Length: 311
Image (cartoon, rainbow, N blue to C red):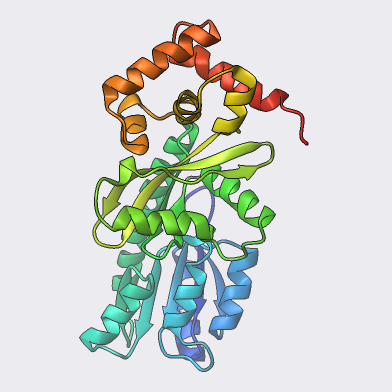
């Protein structure tokens, strides 16, 4: 039996068979779970938009939207990223099992359903989902704006803070699907094209008086990429720094990249300079700005950007 908890966990059962629905509803209710029922994929999607289930039991073969497509659509929602989907079907061919897993399922059971086995699988997947959620919340509390995308730029999961920030930004620029904007997708393609992705500068996106930048962290397998969202104040352009801070064009370029957190080595690679030349430019920048370190220079750059009066 599934252990009782303070909050009854919610199972969404999606099947067009009354017998299967009755069997599973009785078993899950006895296991102290709250059960929601959908007769087809469209209904399942509507229900999941209103109430987030802890686990989804999904028939693969249904009229209208089949289970595979239903799972894909459900998994487009970031809030369902950690929700385990267990497929139920009479289909037992390897290719069908692969389809279910590729659609976003975590398990695949064949009918007729063995109730005790199903409950055991549910226990395992709920425990794994709780661990994943706990890890994500811990990252979120520590201020880590992390998220994972697949190769085409669709967002697979995100820490709560990153999810909120991304959703606000995507809504502001009119992007309805939960995927990174086109400019960031182009950058992602460059990162996957060869070379060191951490050295390829990511485009900035203006948002609510600040700017969002991406940082490439790691790649998992062949299809998932871990990114970090960096939110900082907008910084001015090299032309602005030349005009307002009395810097040369090259010094302004160096300061601009310095202001978005690039290291000396990064700046050297981006601008095609030697690290020693970048060091020399920074010495001149510090002297002209009357500061002693990169932090102080960055603060002046940010202030100059804030104080700029729009034309």
